[in-house]
Length: 155
Image (cartoon, rainbow, N blue to C red):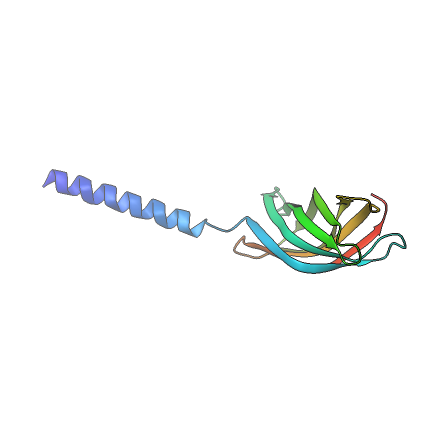
C-alpha cells in the first residue's frame, strides 16, 4: 500500500511539472523564412536582388520594480541573393538588437535590420535594409514579418 502511494505521489509530481513546463513554453524565438523576395534597388550602381534565407528573431525580457517590461529583441539574418540584372550571387549575414520598454506584457515594433549585401563576383557591394515588424504577445510568443527589402549604395 505504501509503495502504491509513493508511485501515485511521484506520478502526480511529474504531471504537475509537465503542466508547468507546458504553460511556460512560450516561443521566445521565431524564424521568418524568406523565399524570392525582391530587394528594391535605390543605388544607381546596384541592381535589384532576389533574396532567400531566414531572419531569426529572439528576445529576453526583464521586469523592473516599477513593473516596466524591458524587452531585448535580437534579429539575425542569413540570406543569399541573385542579382536580377547580372545573376551574380550575393550574401548577407548580420545581427542587431532592439529595445522596447512597456508597462504591459507585449512589444510591437517595426525596425530596420541593416547588413552588408556582398557580391560574390564583380559587382558593387550594397547595404541591405530589411524592415521588420516584430510582435511579442501577452503569452510571450514572438512573431514577425519582413515588410520590406531595399538596398542602398555602399557597405
